[in-house]
Image (tube, rainbow, N blue to C red; front, top):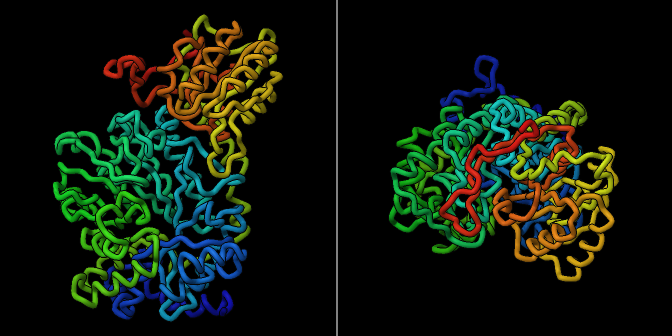
Amino acid sequence: MPSRRTVLAATAGVAASLAVGGTAHADDKKLRSLISRMTLEEKVGQLFVMRVYGHSATAPDQADIDANLKEIGVRTAAEMIARYRVGGIIYFTWAHNTRDPHQIADLSNGIQEASLAQPRGLPVLISTDQEHGIVCRVGEPATLFPGAMAVGAGGSREDARTLGRIAGQELKAIGIRQNYSPVADVNVNPANPVIGVRSFGSEAGAVAGLVAAEVAGYQGSGVAATAKHFPGHGDTAVDSHYGFPVITHSRELWEKLDAVPFRAAIRAGIDSIMTAHIQFPALDDSGEPATLSHPILTGILRGELGYDGVVVTDSLGMEGVRTKYGDDRVPVLALKAGADQLLNPPSLDVAWQAVLRAVRDGELTEARLDESVLRILRLKSRLRLFEKPYVSQGGVTRTVGTPAHLAAADRIAGRTTTLLVNEERLLPLSRRTHRRLLVVGADPASPSGTTGPPTGVLAAALTELGFTATALSTGTAPTAAVVDRAVAAARDADAVIVGTYNITAAQRTLVEQLVATGRPVVAVAIRNPYDVAQLSTVPACLATYSWTDVELRAAARVIAGRTAPRGRLPVPVQRADDPARVLYPVGYGLSYGR
């Protein structure tokens, strides 16, 4: 492989030809000239954003080589780029791309070097899902912020902008230049299994303001933000990873609800918008998923909303887009509908060959491909990838997980914890009267890159605040024996903290039996705030909206009285016995002053 210096020299001419007035914003004439020199195969490659296993572009571990051979037919990222000339690569934790920030930077540089070494080599647009909260790919020591619904509870657009700015700076430092965030879905369905706390809330205007603020933060830092999932995935009880959701909103309701945050994102200059694998009959009654719908992507998004940025599909490996068509038809239909980037197909070879064949057979024109390639290259140019494709290890050290960034995350988290119940002013707990604490409850797998488990994080944080806290994991479905063990341990404590997670009957039994001991019980809903509707016997209840370390530490500070609860519900909580009635409305939240 040529040296970095050789590659840079070889691509200097392309970068210079694309620089306009000393900026990275190329005019279309120069980009079109570049496209005219590309082969059809290179154009097809630019449309794909693909996964690849391994921590290194050229020397991954053997297990990752084996996975690449099985799924992609290549050994390494460098080989995939050479064969398919992909325009984008997506990083995943499970693909072993994100061990630590310095390794990620090396991987990003290796990917760029491999691509720029090709004939007419172009920089790669590296992406990931760094939503924060429950969906993160880059973990500690990078700065991890509260998730969207927690930010919604804080209600501060400035906090959302700060989150985007700092998270964007850190992503850029490690070579990730397109982030699939923020979620612009308005979550109006408490049973939503796929969006939920990934949404800022249920009020379209509030969601829109936070989406626009986060977009400004990310893009001001040089990272392309991505509003998702168009035309709106907030009202479904089906997960599109495993099924095919149908949204039954009328066109009028869509305009008033789902469309509002996407319009705000477009006004904010959003660089990319991700499609949803959902059926939306009021917008297209053909039965097609939105990802494959020309009326939705071209008619509404491009035509009515006036969006001319990059449209990226949600993962083409998800069941919601594979229910009607084979994996060879989906990418072709997505392009015909108006998509630009084809994300993570199950088989890159099948999808790549299908698009190539569609052009050669006349189903797709080369001019149609040129439209999408132009949008993709515009974005790469705007991000200055033609001029500065590489990152430095010094930049990683100076930027990622700095004390100032971590402190900002803690401050933002401190404004999100929501106090929902506080009978007889049980909270804050006093170290004098409630020094010995038992922390029990659900311990779901910790979100990527955080330490976990939740009971341990809470107990450690409370101990640091001067309590003597003991952790006892009882799981999401505690057995009778586990409940008995927790009840016995509670008798030796001055108070009990119990974490609930999408509360189940077994969790409810645990809480009720802990309350029956007579010990003060504080429930912490560590995911959905809706849990409080089934916790009628607890004297105190908090909502954190996620179980990442930063949110759990914030909850501990509220329990200890070091921070006043300031969060307000960004979604309504319905009664458990009568879902048609609201138990706690949007905006509800107690403070310690009353």
